[in-house]
Image (cartoon, rainbow, N blue to C red):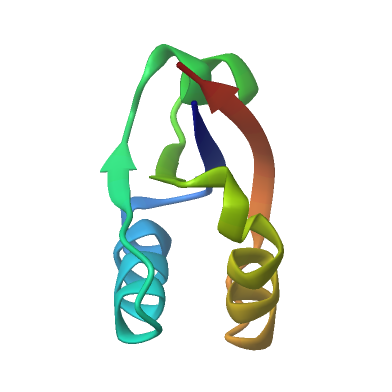
Length: 73
């Protein structure tokens, strides 16, 4: 199972991925069906759900707005 946060643009997705990487969190940029179900043209970052709270905190501190979230197998 992967947690996916949905962001408004590829620019924010790239910024989020770099922030997570610099904090030792592995992530992937995705445009999966799960992302399209939350926001038709958004981009998502997938990661291990065990670090969800840390991801949310890091991105909030960096000013990255999360549009939504979902999970994917």
